[in-house]
Image 1: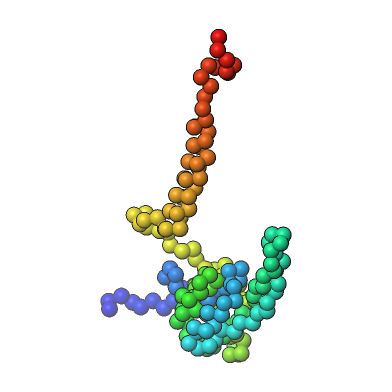
Image 2: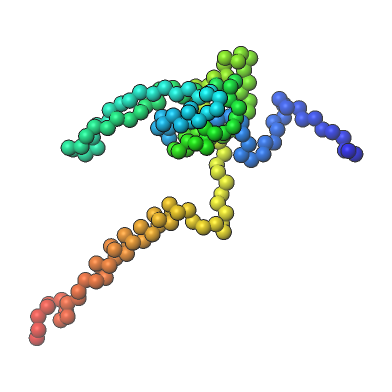
Amino acid sequence: MTKKSVTEQYPDTQPALPPRSRGVIGLFEENCTVCMLCARECPDWCIYIDSHKETVPPAAPGGRERSRNVLDRFAIDFSLCMYCGICIEVCPFDALFWSPEFEYAETDIRDLTHERDKLREWMWTVPAPPALDPASEEPKEIAAARRTAEKLAAAQDAPAQGEPTEPNGPQGGTA
């Protein structure tokens, strides 16, 4: 109360945002499998997804062809979005992330529907996740991969160590 209040001059001076603040949703398109979970779980129905199926040739000779979904359109209408983050939480493939970008105002409300190109641009502003606590235990996936690698290394070393040596030298005969 005894200090003079300070008004930040916003357009000239950018605010100091807290780490991991919520601004806009970014799309990592390579991880999207068009499972539609984000669109189905959205309480505002503000996510629009269009896709088509493509046939993928067999990976090995004699195999069968597979079909996969290909993303045609991914759009979010930010005039409807309530920024709850449900879409980000339900995405099983980590294709959606919070970006701290908050300067995306438009003069026309119809321009607040952002397509996948714009959502992809915001992906580059997503901060890296915080580092793991040094005292925490190793993630289960990494621990399992490390144990498997150690077993394979031990299995490769065992035949080399267990090879029988020749009792009478390199000639193999008796004198």
